[in-house]
Image 1 (cartoon, rainbow, N blue to C red):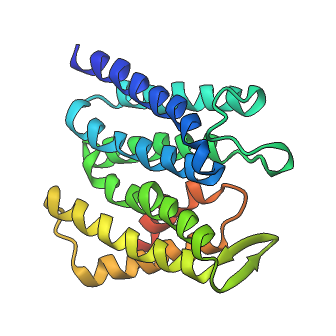
Image 2: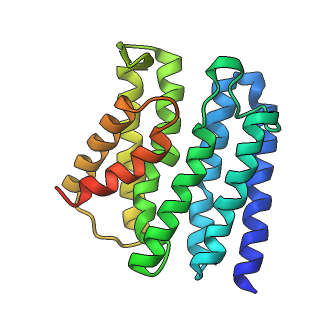
Length: 214
């Protein structure tokens, strides 16, 4: 019953965030998109507390990912969808990423907590990178037609480090500061070279892979 309640509460929370993001468009579309991006990331903490079953937990990103795929076509959540040619599958990739991370974490480690640290750079670092890059727009560079900025990459690095450090402390994961700094650099580099919303998958999985190397 706990897991069933968790699924219902999780879906309700995420849909509410996505719907509310449209009200944030008064601050600009990029702000409303990244508001939703970071608020949905809070779900990981909810999941850590509620779920003890991988199937139930996986149901949440499957449901929301399907809804976002339909929203890509029908623009149900205009606060997170880019218009016209600028549209990408980034919102769908976000929930595919969640599904992958949840399954890796449960199946290899027995619960959601361990893989959460690799979600922090995506959930919060990537969100802040976009906002800071748009606000300050310093050191512009292009990667395969996708515009990036040094200010955004720096924000990605700093926020990734702070959130991973905080997550490690909260859940007593015992990561060294040196390793977290290295992972934050990796996350920033991966974000910088990823295009068309693919960073929603490459950031957490790439950072996870790098963790085995350093």
